[in-house]
Length: 265
Image (cartoon, rainbow, N blue to C red; front, side):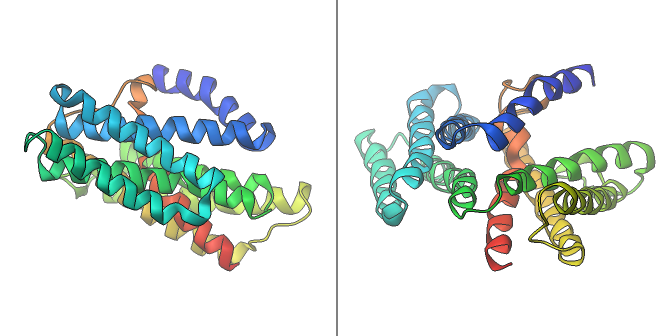
């Protein structure tokens, strides 16, 4: 718990500055870095240290996906095709040493992780108030935090014991409730100090519940991958929080959803 608090004290102010006050290029650089580390971590989980070259390739491609979105979003499909050619070309060059599941991990890490992190760039480019870029974090971290404490104090019924043994149904419900509370608080703050919210209280309840469900799906999805390959954490960047994929697994699922819903609203 001390390690978790220390990480929060250090990184939350950094996150707030980058999202709310930093120049757009700083946010883009941070997203490039996070995507690159995430792509590396995923491939390292799947392939192990014997294929560090493939891990670096996955990380670079994930970082370039965000970079490509920042500079030339209109031709991102061409870059996805290029990544497909790169990974299969690398596998052929290595003479069958690279297996199909490693290729898929590289493609998922570079395309999906890069795409999810780039959702923040698309939100920022839409002209919406930059405070809304915090929503994917709020509606992911709040769900995770409330689920943790609800499960710790009330948890009795296992949610997905073969995937994540410590998660409970009570914790899941607590996470959804916490998301709704934090979502409504966000609307209140925007109405009171930032000239009004583009999302009213009613739609925010639905958005918070949807993001809470998707956040838990993202958490369990990356836990499923870790369990399959027998690792505890993807990395150690955030100490007790693990690596990028341990800390941002829910955000990767929630950010595109928030982008889609806000674009509709």
